[in-house]
Image (cartoon, rainbow, N blue to C red; front, side):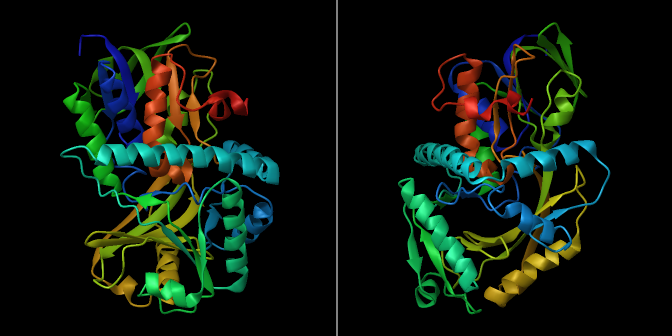
Length: 416
């Protein structure tokens, strides 16, 4: 490609695709560069939730103590694969520092703002003729197997209401009306009616399609080998299929983003948080509301003829191997509460690496060390929930405009 582009977006997940779309919508000449196929990473097999009502961050009061117990159990919701890794040790220290009531509240407010903005943008996009990514607004039902779990859910609801959010506590009988397949022991639950869900792969495909319609070039199979620096700028992006040049470079490479900027004076404390999902044929009597099993941290999402369930968080570097023990732990959690669902016709078992920061906030902004780089990564388990607004913010940053939301709390330099 001999012509100089206005922007190169590295990463073909939801954030990269949204960035390419909003840049192209402004008339920018854009190339979206992805080493594999579109939506082949963390954006593919997740729950598909847009959840402004359920935005409590991972680090919070008591979480470190709970996590230390979980670390000893390879089937727990949060597991760190033992390894000698200085970056992991620094990440865990940052996680512990972020686990205060004050920081957790601040992060919840920020994450909620991002998700609410994405919810609005997704509703606008889905309303366009010919655009369909399975956007459904049926809320999110948190199911609690124990009284302690129900108390925690009620406490979270109180915090949400203080922020102006909505939610309704439900008895076990009321839960059964909304989720007819629930037959395991349930203490009760909480319904968050504002939340929505999408089919992730269709969302990414729709965003990339809209970008292409506006002239963006979708370059799959282009593995980035190096970002070539000249002074305070990235002059070229060298890929396995040649070099590209642009005025602005967007790093939206998910868990692989730290490697892209290594040696450029930018440190991104992002760990690959491996999650698993299993997709089966959806039973006809399942109902249409996504569920979260509070104690096991397992999600269940109906997606038309399919049903996806999964969860877990495993800090294992960039290891993409499948740990069947963790998959079985998810299936057992489903069998306790929704017996028989886990035996429905199997469609796919998936694993992916969610890019997770120690404070569970995304990284959105320009690093001080480089003049023509915007970084958009670190969304953890909220990539779909925050991805569309993140793409719009990226386009505004590239245009050097005032952003729709204040991005200073998401600065790449906050970890310095």
